[in-house]
Length: 81
Image 1: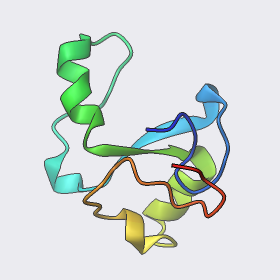
Image 2: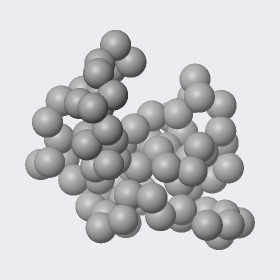
Image 3: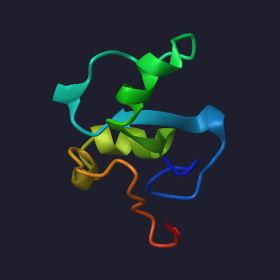
């Protein structure tokens, strides 16, 4: 997931959220108390976003993140992938 928001370079873990790129594929909310083998497949359906961009995506400001084929893609033009 790159360790930072897919839309900017923000990388403080307390301000990052997992955004499901296809809401229909969401099986459950991700929790830190869950088994890694259970969490990993769910994380593969997500893109990492800072809380500001996560709110903007849900408000419709970034329609390209509503459904993605590649959850690892970085949308920040300064990103080096």
